[in-house]
Length: 60
Image 1 (cartoon, helix red, strand yellow):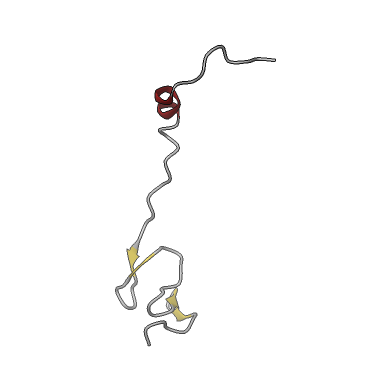
Image 2: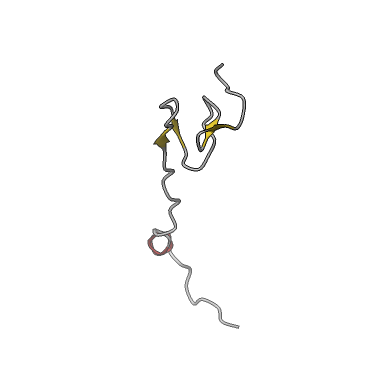
């Protein structure tokens, strides 16, 4: 079996894993109420998605 000859240092390990960062979460303004929400998700404050009331409004 292949076995590493030396232990991988923290510096080498971290340099190799620098591209494995989680992407930033996109947010946009809700067209109905203007509250910030994630794209393709129901607005938590007004309950609208794609111009229709999908869930009961949380603030009302």
